[in-house]
Length: 166
Image (cartoon, rainbow, N blue to C red; front, side, top):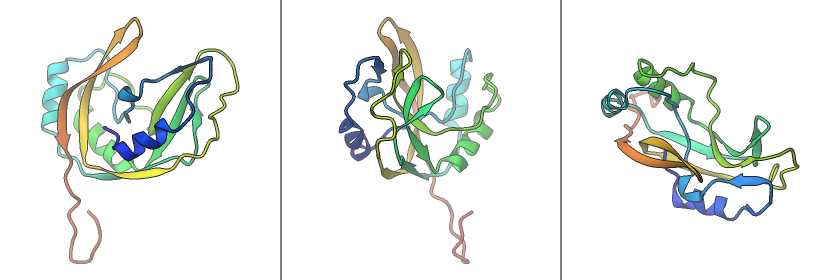
């Protein structure tokens, strides 16, 4: 999903100059909802275009963390319901076993064991998720590039007379 400019701006304020970390290009920053590997891209596009999922409210932070030993990330919470909707729609095409979802924005990959200066740094923000993008990732000599091949608006949750969400 795309990041709003206010979130992107707060991430750009982080000092991403430490050596020994392969920093992600800010133009490539995103939050992955579902990963597909070795699939029929036309079938994925078809499933994606027919998907009917709901808007979500994402919260980033509270601090920069590691995902595993090598990935420096900003955690993202609040997307569980959206993830379940996407997985339910796209499950026939996902050949990758569904691991527990960990929402995040990848800032960089640590090349060798080191103390990442940004780890533990406070970062906060929130935003309404109104749209999903279907992105194809292509390897290049300088890393992966991402190309948007589909876009889907998300639906508003219906409210009932009792005021609850459904």
